[in-house]
Length: 472
Ligand code: NAD
Image (cartoon, rainbow, N blue to C red; front, top):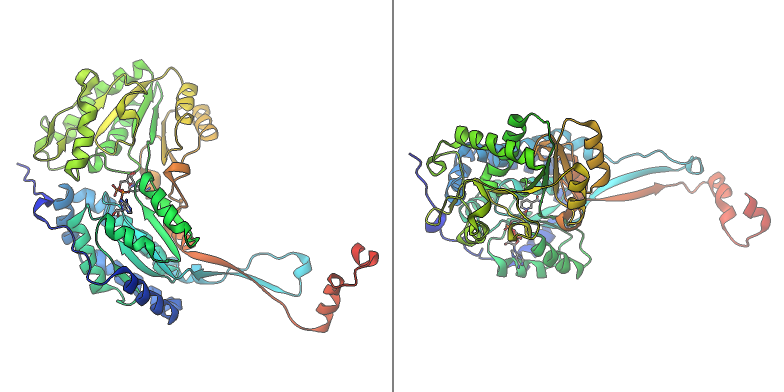
């Protein structure tokens, strides 16, 4: 029988003793010492980061069990294994990425040499979200280290057991001058945002993203904002319903739907809706048994606030086709599918971020596209279809952070693809080389000599100007 332990008895992470001003000063002086410029230093720190994850997988599993009732496999898949994979890819490519690029040059620069250096920005702030607290803090941090920055990390206070652990481990494994964790809640993040950083990387809600963007504006600090929103699924008629349903439900049920790129709502015809419901009932039973609450493979919601917000979507029982069971004492919400939902229903007014899937009936792909385009640009779009023209129709007529065709979530796992949003779902991207590029300033360098032949060739630019010179 599933034993569920809660983070209720875990104290929120203590406010770290030092204040943000001191932390930033220490990090800045470490950056100015030049130690992070050395590729060997970066490699060593990345190896330490790899060890930090590798040697503490059971501790992360325990912490996430406390925070989210998370099954071990989901912690491996979405947090620790993912972070390790990204860190290892970065380590493998580090020397190549740090080598200055030599772009091709125009003939007028025949006597010059040109290059692009990837320079670190300086002191970077990484603010994480609670839903994948290891991945969302350490993967951007790996990119920042690879690019030669010092980092102040701010884990989410909401996943309190994991935040505490991250603070202990960063202190134990990484250079103490260059890398810092500052734990705390909204007041502490607000304090941090008053400091001057050279780059801010934020993962969280669109609403808080705007606060971060405004704070960054004070010093024109560049930002990456990894935000959320409502990621739609289009389910076409005639697809293999069993395969499509599994892939859609996996995206909605992993981490109990608390995934930034979880399918938020689904668009399909009335006939396909009926077929989906029949198969979904079968799949959920196969995965979680007849009583989901007893399953060890299903998470709980992160907080009472989150639970209360989600249960208001279930008050009107009329359109619950599957699920609907809740238990406040465990912060449990069963995977729930709502049918024939109206675009005006409360569940369609905000990102759901939980295990509730509303279905909106449309008549054809064009109607689905109009529906999507009438709303904010989503972080992800999922299109399930066998038809090549329908795929192109969606790709050419919608704008989203990313797209997976015939699956959900999986574009996130390809480290050679940039991950990020557009518009209200975010700005900028990361993962693999994109993380390295995000955290480096691309410095253009032109080197030329002071020899006479070059001087003669370029002297047409000097006054006095003349018509003859103009023609040259
Ligand atoms: P959140 O915006 O509430 O919090 C994120 C971080 O911001 C936390 O560290 C928190 O301490 C801080 N924060 C909260 N309120 C603040 C305020 N008023 N001023 C300053 N800082 C503040 O987000 P969350 O609840 O942790 O995460 C859920 C959201 O994050 C969802 O919208 C989800 O889609 C999004 N998300 C996006 C991605 C992505 O990669 N694009 C990944 C995970 C989650």
